[in-house]
Picture 1 (spheres, rainbow, N blue to C red):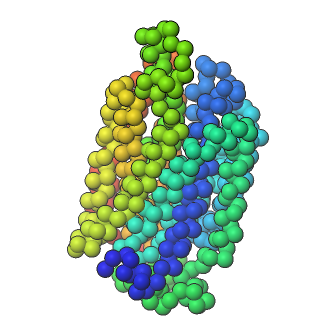
Picture 2: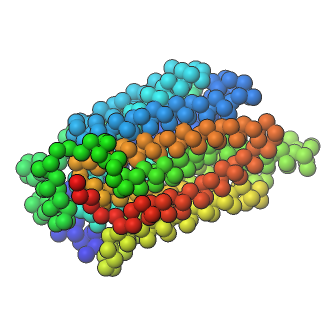
Picture 3: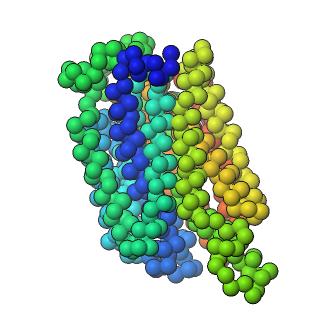
Length: 466
């Protein structure tokens, strides 16, 4: 039965919930993306110091976010599980919106680092809360699709940002870019509070049909396991760390989340650098040229290029959730469907190995390979999040998601440090494109490595027994 026919038969309120967490994730990434888009503007304003240290100082600001995000992730999941999805999600969004606005008051590296850390620790609440929402509101076979849909909000935020932020900064100053994007989050609360409640509460209020409630709770094995878990004490962090399933998710996120961070924070700079290289090469061959840089062959509008990358990523996020559902509908068991889909998605990022070489020919070719890799990441992400609800009882989903998020952010710290050191080194040598080439090799092989590690740790995704 298709999603459309199911919705017509039993109702679609769960998709309203999915729309709410999609909107929150969009806002989350809109606020997160502003820094990367204004890197050159902030550098020119002296925020990151002199040219000799700008790459290192920028990476330090990124690391401040990553450390805070890692710490936040460790506690956000437990916070959400304890406080409840409705209140926990609201407090997280208020926190990160205020921190986003706070960037307007930072005018040097360490004050920027402070606000970036404040953003990181509060934004950590989004994915544990969103993943818990999906576990509460969707049956197993729809979870990857629902996760793919809400996770596509990350791409929408990343699409909207390059099409608006540079122009706001140009018209009113970079401070207003942070203020206006930060204020958007507060409007979400006007929808969240009246619309969100648990399925049981919505059923009691008469806003959810019995048939949709039964469909949401149609996984009999899971319901049996949940009833058994309700009789037991809550599982502590330390107890969760004794399961191989936790470590599979931990290493899956540790190895692949940093790749997305790298694209998010360095893609605009890479594309801007490719433009500068094209202009420099053209001027050497045509020293009498006096026209606009934008008229130089191979020069691209990098904000539009970034928007295109994340537009393609949106498709990857949605297809990422659809493919395992199609496999399951054709008779494949959930474990095999999930792992087969994830293996397929792990192959596509290898395209980015050609990014630097193709970029030397035409920058749009590099954009294409990065777009494919980002789409594959989002498809992978939709499924790796779903493995948590495949393997753990609902009451621990946010906590395990937080542990994995902490691992991903820790990997992000390492990649930010490595990128800063590597790119500064090659920038000082006048060969920054070599540094990007090395980083793209890391980005290309990370997913296959993660798939192998996860498979070795957990040959079959199935609910844990505690």
